[in-house]
Length: 84
Length: 176
Image 1: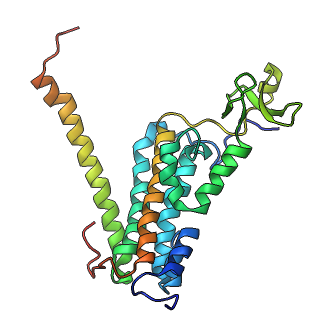
Image 2 (image 1 turned 135 degrees about the vertical axis):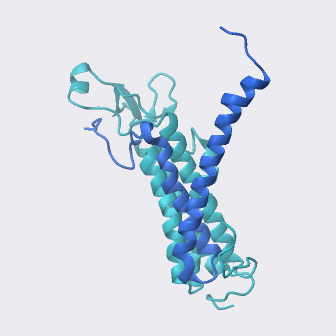
Image 3 (image 1 turned 90 degrees about the horizontal axis):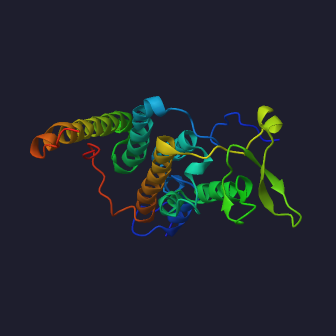
């Protein structure tokens, strides 16, 4: 019998309220794989992984802020919409 | 060419890299690099499966995403095979192979094909349902994206194992 209970790796998680936090493991995974290719001295690997993870997260947060400003502030200023 | 050669083309390392993420570096005798690449790619791929469920890897319903995910190698192909053959069944009306609705379970018809059967209220109350929940919305998108990023990172790692002298490694780790 199959049941409706949640099964890890089979059913999706219910993290819709905190979806933006899922950026952290994705950024860490990208940094781990990329720096394994890129770093010359592997003794510096953990430091570079931490730095790249922070850079990705900061970059995405800045892009989110920029998108918010454009959509919520600039576009209404440039193309005012009639009141509903 | 010796299997551990870091000059020119290295097809042995490329074969190992295609089979298991990061294994090309083991052939090149760079175990720390192999471990880092494997950890990163598997964090992305297993993380994507954890977030989006097995529905994040679907060669039939999300074909374009799967082209990127398949770059992870046999692991992605195996997950997709299991998804298509153990978690999907045929629609009893259209015969289309699809995921189940929350009020369905897999049954076998007279010809031995896997088909979806609608559950009774009593069966639903007992907790019966399809073998997996269909991923929708953000969890499905993020799961698919994470698995696809794993494939793209594995392509970089594969090319580095195949052509170890093309990339220029930097002592400072390069710009991120």
